[in-house]
Length: 78
Image (cartoon, rainbow, N blue to C red):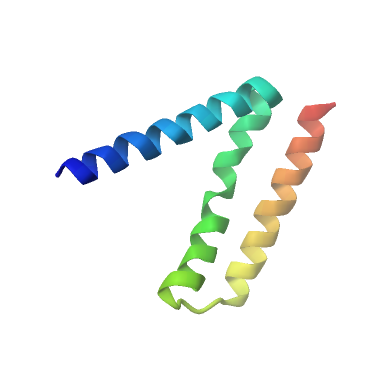
């Protein structure tokens, strides 16, 4: 129970510190784009650790997410 609590507090705390530093460095609009990358990383981790299969739809969706994030990042940066 203690190990789970420590893992939860440390991982969450570290992630929040990293995110707040990202907000300071890039601003809130561009930092919010990080949330759009969650599905891409979920597919990657599923492929690597769970042995899931990659479909054409996953590739297409991931490409759209990355393209949209890149476009939004460039538009917000100007």
